[in-house]
Length: 474
Image 1 (tube, one colour):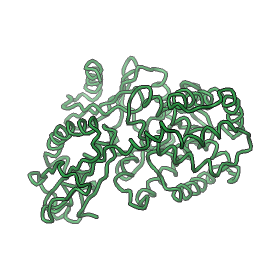
Image 2: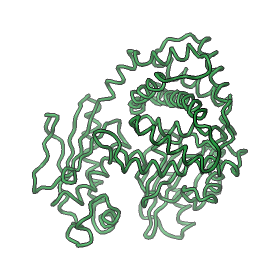
Image 3: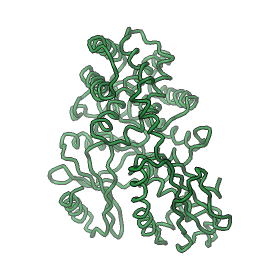
Image 4: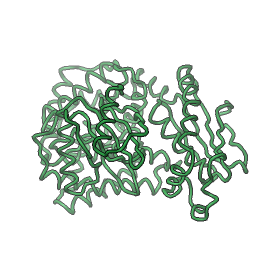
């Protein structure tokens, strides 16, 4: 984020809240070209946003007003700058549903805690699609008012040119184009008079105070119900177990039927088609960001997408003939280029552990040795207070104590500066393992909080796999 942009956002904050900004934290970039920062004053925090695309901003502003009016949990927009390229948003914290999955995933799949968060999301999704879909102003949608033929062909050709061609996948171009036309025509026969969020996935769901909130819906438009459900349940790196997918699919239908009548069999048939086009759209994005823009961490999602694709193709039964498209999709798993990416996707694994010094420093199971051990015992200990003794560094009361009564923020800034150099060099040199451990007296409060925060920092900033373990809690 350029200094001029930051200065404009600071001025907007100070003029609106009449408070001086004490700290600005530039947030990591995502898959879009929008830029965000967190601003802090003595009494409040807010998210500052900059986007030069005014039409996209107008869609976001309009949708937000509609959502809030229908009690859909989205961030409040505090103020919009004069040129409508800068605006301030409610700060929903740092924890996305994707982060939560990483923290609470069990060795055999999703924990009950993760499933419960998904159910919170799926209680809201039909309301977003059906209720707001009746009132939203589709004239502000950008770049298209509907997920129509043109939109589908854009996505399919995005997949063809930025994924198939850059990954050197052979195909008959005319036959594939004919199949794309037939496939999109079939999808357009689904009922499509609902609000389509467009990028409804785990990184666009925020968790705060035991509630879910939705962000990044400025690409919304009119479309079919199945697309957003496909986006969520077949979200690549979330790596949802298939049995959980089935459970959540049924849960969604139950919630949807509270609002409209649904033919479950017909819905499911269309659903599989929309899963396919969503996976292809996502793979086009991975190809553009990864192959073309050389942002390698986007390529790490490809093995997950291929796994989902294989599952759908094995049970595919669509009432439309698309032989070349199916042939190409089934052949992706055997591609030498993609196999190499799948292997490199296992590159650097960072094992982060919280522990109690009373029980010794954790060992490195990879056998490489080395890494970092950080001692959190110099920080104020929540465990010394009766109200926190039975809680952990993941409970909101303890988090608040640590964030307001200790110097943890400064401590973690130092940790980040120390480990950043090693992570960058390990990636550059092709190393496969790094261990980072945080210790405190009981391994229950400070070390747990620190391990969670650094885990999140690494996931958001580097193309690495993070294994998080709270030894004394588990």
